[in-house]
Length: 394
Ligand SMILES: Cc1cc2nc3c(=O)[nH]c(=O)nc-3n(C[C@H](O)[C@H](O)[C@H](O)COP(=O)(O)O)c2cc1C
Image (tube, rainbow, N blue to C red; front, side, top):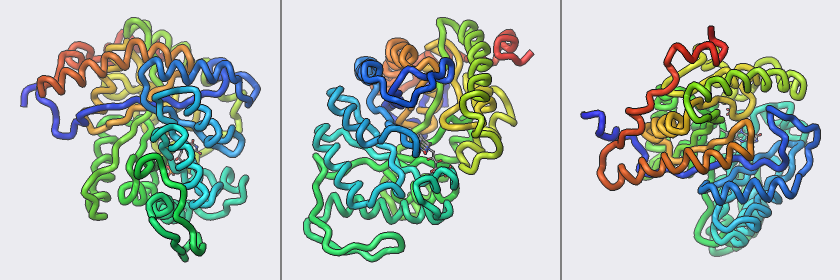
């Protein structure tokens, strides 16, 4: 195989996601308010739309804004971008969630997506009265997925008597705009793989080294195959890019950022210390322990200083290097790439201007020629030892 040939694992296309922020608070400049700054939120989601993103995730936690309501607002503030509702099954009965999602889908003419969160922390689940252990929470998610799909598709009323839910004569339910709504799974535990591989349309990851992600994608695909599925879940991978005009400037910026992020994390989220219960965060910390740098541009110091909480691994470099690094993940089979910076609004605009077009240009070249373009060969990334001092490695 020549270096121009594409690996058989490469996804033919890629779409971009960015998490929506409701106010200007960032890890670099924390603002001690949890509220919605409407002017900011409007600007943020419109800049995602103008920047060419395809989706935006509305996250959910017991103390956050409600993700259904924010997703509905995104739908009305934009024309094209697809809101992804983060939904914990413990918060909403499946028939009600199906109805709310179908409503959102109709209100956005087919743009709704749901991201099911089974819950990574027992203490956080208990805040809303959910005392199931994690393996049972995933079993509940599995039953939930079946009920969402049935609620959207059954032409007549149906009854259900399962392990977690029981009801009589529901339906026909309120239907989505088209036939169904994509269902995504977040989580990296064995149970997450079991449910996601067997049933999800999308399986999501935080940023991992390429070789580790390859193993995990193979695992999802094997579970899907064993479940008798003819299709495989789409793969979603998430990063926190730190970009500047050149690789060198980006590494200087990364070195400065991580000190501020570490100091703010200790002040603003001191409760998030100790070993996290969710496997996704445990993996992020294990990667950070093993090495600070992986592959072309993956940097783990940001995960190390934030206890692996949420999406925390960075891609560092020029727009060309970061675009090439994203293409490395596309080569492994990722077709959904979520990017969100530490300087949230400015970064969303910058990625839309400088990173997305480079990735899309390469994808267009691949579609036209069946071959790889030159971007990945020309931008090998961050291993140059002279950058070590900027990332605090020297
Ligand atoms: C892309 C992505 C987005 C996520 N969004 C949320 C979220 O909005 N709220 C939340 O509580 N957990 C979120 N999670 C975290 C996990 O889904 C959660 O911790 C999981 O249910 C249990 O983790 P585990 O299976 O890795 O142990 C997200 C995970 C991923 C990969």
